Image (cartoon, one colour):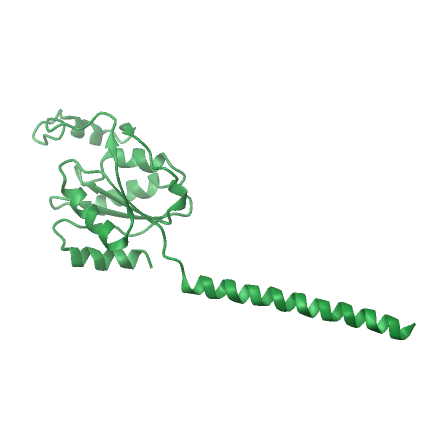
Length: 196
């Protein structure tokens, strides 16, 4: 009886050792795959009033291999809407009211599949256009990495960071950069650091 019991115990022990070995082997394979690291999926979103920000966005797309997405206002901005010399122009009125959320035409499909989202905009009166807040507040960005970039006439990006961080709730918002007149090489170097 003891021999039989011993054989059964040995069989169970051997089976246990084999199962544990398989589990650890699978974990090693998984760790090796993870350490190689898959490239993050990148989305390059931009809003451009005159085309300047679009040029910067295209450089980031080329540098990262990301997908390009243009934010379009449901009611397009005309040149009169962007006439900064007129205090009553649409853009000026929107920027003075932080609760304004201009409606957007269209939506990003399956935004959850993207890991890193670059978001670009011109600087209007020292901050991001309110339509950028509309965009960021329209999605669940929890766990996403958001990388702001802008083009400006000299204000820089700092005045827009607070608004972007607040609108991109639960996302990891990285330090942004003003890409006005930056060369492709300069943009490439910066953008690649953000997706490592």
